Image (cartoon, rainbow, N blue to C red; front, side, top):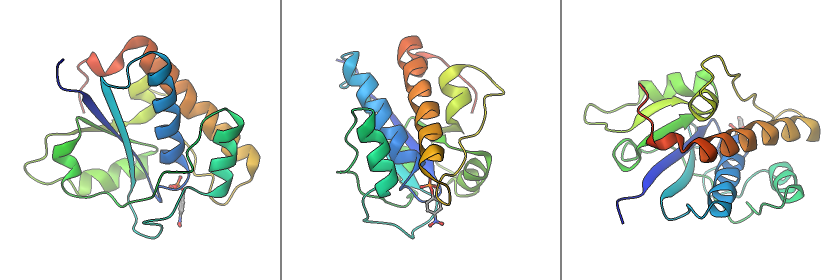
Length: 164
Ligand code: 4NP
């Protein structure tokens, strides 16, 4: 079998949006029998929550949709991620800007926004930070990341060449 494609979901803290995206993508890939073809991880721009599980509201929301993300642990984006991953997929424009600012000279990963990459819709919305919000905000995030996962898996988006 050829080398797996490696995707890194990125947000600010790695306890809300990117763990939910990782969980949604893993579940959709597994349902399609593609879990060996596409590997998924997540990281955060900031170091504040490193080593912690996802936010309890994110865990509860994912669980409500049949996906267990409680075993994930937060980590900060590392310089080596720019070599280890094929795609680094940012939740919003601030995350993408911070990501590009940390890009080493020898980086090979392509960096872009998760929703436009997954859906093919260039003007797809950013994923809003739910950290200071409520359960409804987490549900909105889930709908976005799961919709992204569904579209990406259906279209095998990682096989497409996209600038980034
Ligand atoms: P996330 O949400 O980027 O979706 O994980 C946040 C989590 C924590 C913080 C900010 C956003 N924080 O400032 O600690």
